[in-house]
Amino acid sequence: MSLSDPLGDMLTRIRNGQKAGKATIVSPASKVRASVLDVLKREGYIRGYQQSDGEAGGIEFRIELKYHEGHPVIREISRVGSIPKSRRFRASSTAWASRSCRRRVASCRITRRARPMSAAKCSAACSKDSAMSRVGKNPVNVPSGVTVSMAAGLLKAKGKLGELAVRVTGDVEVKLEDNKVWVKQLGGSKQARMMWGTTRNLVRNALAGVSQGYTKSLDISGVGYRAAVQGKTLMLQLGYSHDVNYPIPSDIQIKCEKPTSILITGSDKQRVGQVAAEIRGYRPPEPYKGKGVMYLGEKIVRKEGKKK
Image (cartoon, rainbow, N blue to C red; front, side):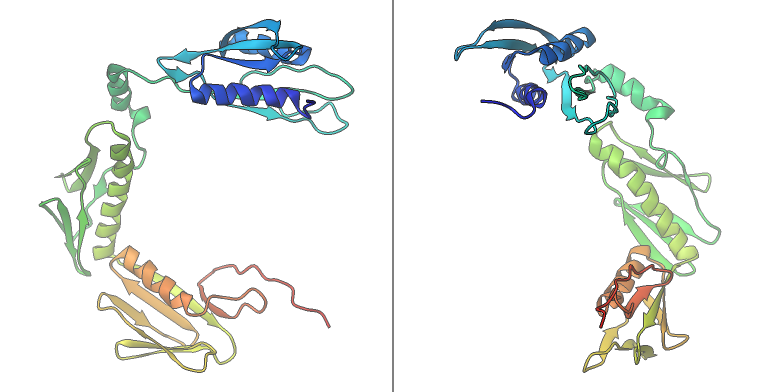
């Protein structure tokens, strides 16, 4: 059976064999494949290869795959094609082999699997600044007029705009020192590293929310489209046969300085964004005339309408 891409077939066999944990794989022999295998062997990606007679006739390569502490040395290997009728081709990042034939170039790209570190090396790496989260390692300054307390896994921030609480998981530790909130990870697990920067940003948002607050502005575009606040209800006229009545949450303030603008304010950044998204969802901007409810400064990709 003839193959449209013999080199790609061999690379696929190597990749699948590494993922399956096989010691050796078999591939048909050719000069181009031999040149690529020579580079892979020289760079340390495979143990070697041998040429032998195939069971169905012909000559084949028996390729010995390489592993390190039970993990495949090659994480990913892919074919890099050439530009038709040109000698230019994309250079590979680690190793490549090529053979010009009728103005065609054969090359491949390899990604080496990172070798797992021992517990001692992992602990030493995590203690260095280069392995630390660039977000989590920075403290959060407590604004003036804001009080912070920790109790039962909750960080509570109280200011002039209200009170917010941030739940702290067991993967991180939060401390208040010198009017600054420090967040530190407990252990070197993946979950701890993820929650480190996340918790720090949640704390920063809570402190900024109770001291300054957050705002979202919406614009309304369309003939007859308008908004007005009546008590605790936002009245929206958005081209439907009925008015849309949106009940204003108790922790959110909504103002309509003019009929085509809506200003949403609150101390909780997530709640402000959620309310703005819900109001926008009643009539999202359409791409032909741009009518609907949109964020202030939002760019609408316009489409060309039907031509008469």
